[in-house]
Image (cartoon, rainbow, N blue to C red):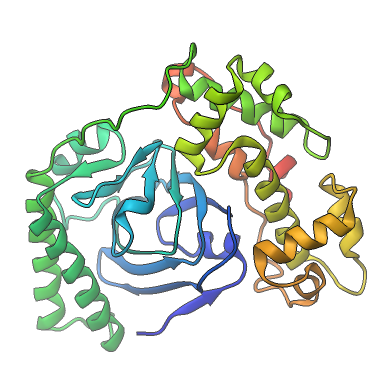
Length: 349
């Protein structure tokens, strides 16, 4: 199967069928970020790998329902602050923002259903997806789904999907039956024990903190500033950020800064732009420290990224950045969300 390998993580995220959002790496890359995909009559099949510890914030697109199961490292994953168990998968629908954290390289098998598809009865999804993205199911059914997705992907990549034959129809029916049985026998997973009980809801703590980060981009911020905005202690704030994003708030702040700079470098004109000018736009003042941190995170110098030809130089910038999606957790409970106009702040891709 052919793998499409990505250096630009925003491009990687855009190419994941059915999803919108952003990845932010939180540690040095260990392996390639790649996607394998094929299209059938009413769904997309994809297997993809995230090549480093990272956090993702986003949601399903309006035309899709996504079912995804990890092929590796179940113990290193968290979804909306909860560990994803070995008997769990992820079910994503429009209007349900989520965060995903990996502490290692992770490979996923995913099925993206078009909204109007008839592969699966709509009522099967209604109750399962209404209570969050995590679904617990019998391990045998989950393993069956993984096998069929990878087998169907291999088959679809080897045939002309515009003229499906009997084997393609048989695989689609097998996949539909497996997924229907899996969802019909699924249950809501138990909530993992929280490390702290903050005086305000976690969604509010996250929204307040990220709102301050968004408003003060390019300015120095300290942990005391974030705790004051969130109204919680430093320990509580650190625990909540580790639950939802895999790292503490100051580490996340630095990772966001480096990722924003990398995105800008990969889209810049090396004949006109300079690394120091781009880095300064995102608040860098110690360029020697920045250079060391950047190389430690991405395994190359910032000047190499600047000289790399853009993958899609004419592609539209992302409408919303990572901060926008991450701050939307629990919108229905808060009655509001972090305000960000398209192209502002982190959206300056």
